Image (cartoon, rainbow, N blue to C red; front, top):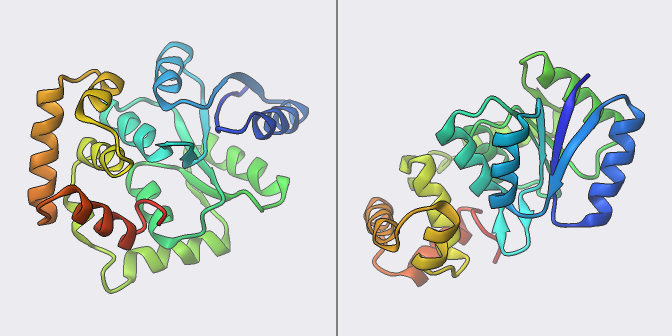
Length: 210
């Protein structure tokens, strides 16, 4: 019996997903709207598959993807998102997602994605595969953000969302000084001198919405 975990910041979406998945014979072992809580649950519950939204209020699903990659947790992630931006598809795949499904897709598409990733294979619909190709072959597809480590990508996302070093440190179990060190290093890699410049770069590269 396949065990799934849901991360989405809308309760009604999680309830709908749970109903669809359980009707298809899957077991939903947990759910959350918060990446930090979700990470703890994923370590404790060890589900087979994670269904992850990228937009989580003032947090980002990319944070959780980066942490899963850093810890090499065995859960296989399916990103379930409204975003059809090539950069989001590309970044999710770079961070280890096994599949990317658009929220407007038919239910059968999601169930097929689950079946595929449970076999250890990647799943991309034709539309999403085209977005991935755009992400990896565009003129600036290998932009400066690709030079960042998973932890640096996690922190840059939180910085551009306006979170302080103390808040980031609390969520990631790091000292504020360590967060500051990460921030200085990633800003040097990105060749930006201040946070407003970092935010503008993140918007241009699709890391956050304007």
